[in-house]
Length: 260
Image (cartoon, rainbow, N blue to C red):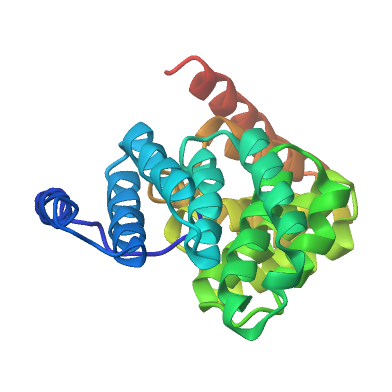
């Protein structure tokens, strides 16, 4: 959900899987076999063939005594739930993994894996509306050495948690930070919409209207609901005393809800 990578070429992935299958027919050391299976699992996961990816991870767990290989397989098995849109199962598995390997994850060579786990957990907690638990995890994630766009997505989620808990001043800070980091287009739209909604809640009506008007002009590009944007603009215009605009936006919101 929050990773950035180039769109993989499915033919290249399938060709690489075929190469790994050929390698796995050879007389391999346990380490070589585990490495090939882990690579194959990642490729299956990238193709969305999660059952086959899980089987590869299980083969590693059943056939390898290498602690690093088992670590990678257990993590990979849990992370597949995120890919499947199942944040509850992902959170449960990743939290158990975090506790089980707590000492190992403190080592310098495991910091990238620890950062990955915490980012996933922070986003899963947000998706599950467990906002008070998500906030400290997301705050920790923002201290990691990540790409600006990844930090933008984390900052948006942190802002959303505070918005949902009606901590509007903190929400404003994090939504602005998200937009400064330059997140992907979809998150930029959500960031601007919720920044506008936050400013409305804080009584900064003129600025709220500017943000929401921008959302209106770029709603398709941003992937926003015009019904929600119009509804928010109607509320802002009402509070600004701009009655005719408020009525017009309320009408547009009703029409958008009906698909007119």
